[in-house]
Image 1 (cartoon, rainbow, N blue to C red):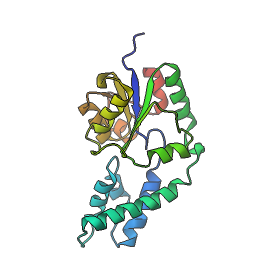
Image 2: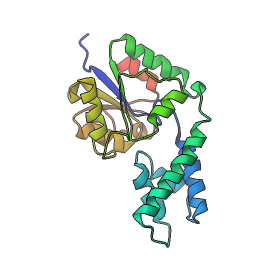
Image 3: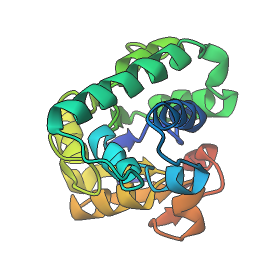
Length: 213
């Protein structure tokens, strides 16, 4: 069977592992400290959004105006809280079916990459035991535009020396699917994006990738 793709690019959070609750707890702690209302409904708006853009959404609820320097300090404070929470992660946070799927795709000869807007990607991969596993990692440390801009996926493809049309993106956020499509790539979805039927393949779990590839 002729392969349709050469490379698979995975979003990190919500696909490889789940850090949503850590993000929520960190943003909640920050919001409480400055007296800004924050709940899970607002938190849902932050999915797939950069740290600074997320902060702007949270500060919509504040009667105060913040300078850029103050915003930078708040974003840094949130990230420190988040990183402390991430230290609780272990390889047990990597679901067995996800690791089996990654190993299965590797055996099939696919190049594997991460395409995430998170600047904490290397630390998270270390915590869950995947340091050095992927052929390329493109994350918030080497992009300037967050999803739905396709930059993160296009750079990942470039790092793999793979044509965008030969890359499949695996995403759980609609904004990530839009980024993939705008970058000329197909998308397989899980989670919320799958429920919205946003992808070219809408899966109930990551392990279904082995059935379609």
